[in-house]
Amino acid sequence: MVSRTGWTATALTVVGAFSALPSAFYTHIVAATGTPWATALLFSGHGLASIGGMTVAARAARRRSLVAIVVVGVVLDAAGAALLVIAPLDQLGVLLAARVVCGAALGVVVAAASLVVVSSRAGSAGVTAAVFGGVGLGSLSAGLLAAAGLSASQVFLVGALALAAVVAAAALLTPGDAGSAVPAASASTIPVPVSVTPSAGRVVTLAAAVFAANGILALFTSTLPGEIARLAGGASLVAGLSAGTVMLSAGAARLLVGAGRDRRLPTALAVLLAIGAGGIVAAVAGPAPIAIAAALVAGIALGAAAGLVYDLAVRRSAAVGALVTVQRAGQLGLVVPPVLMTAAVTL
Image 1: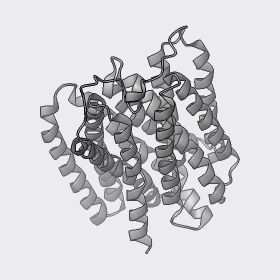
Image 2: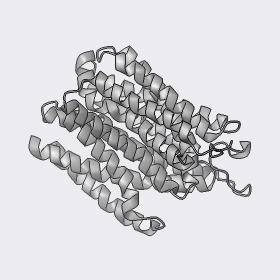
Image 3: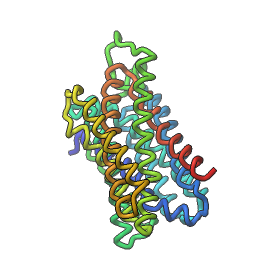
Image 4: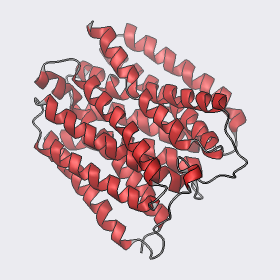
């Protein structure tokens, strides 16, 4: 049999991984569609749909078990995966529709699964590792599979099969371990004491922190892979590796700093931001080989910084009953920066 928390964390990881599979093919999509806005549109559609998915999941949690909601989200993701499998890379409309479906599915799974994982022994570290680790593994896997000769459709098919396996594994959940509905009073997060009432200012601060953290990650997984791949001759493996290392560093940073050691965060963030800024300067000013290495270093450092901020915000927001609210702001952070960056470059 499979434990509730273990299956849910796996589902969160696999869905996160599937959301990142297109990262290795963004340069191909831009070339095939002929518009530099392709990446920004796909990111925006995915991110906005995920916000809607989170909202629906939070409301459904009042009446349905969290694990059942996660199962529905994974099935929805598989439907979006089927669209991606049949979509030619030059059909932006079909690709966008598929990304919207997958985005809604991601929102449903992240909202419901986070409530399960954050209330387990894994805590916020489990959420951070599953979300960012999954996305990182997805980017790396896409790059490796593309380098092995698989087409985009074939890579998406591999992802769809992984999603189907997760759904099938749900049948092995321990009897009576499917979870329960969340009380209406706290449907947007894990149950907390009634006396805990988050102030609007605190929620806004946490939401802004997650928005900024995800904004950094969005820029370094939407624009950085394509630019590095361009410098390296357009290799999908390079694009996947660059996006994957950024997200894996975000997921691993919390584990390296350690739980309950928030006093280390200011120093760690200062060092990581300094390294990231230096890497960006070197990437812009240096020749191609140096630029590639510097961009990767900057992405890893800033990804780690974003992971630390995200984890802190998850812990604090879960403690005051505002987890999904803050996560929605994080998804918005995946939308706005890529659009602004694309506009700045093309307009």
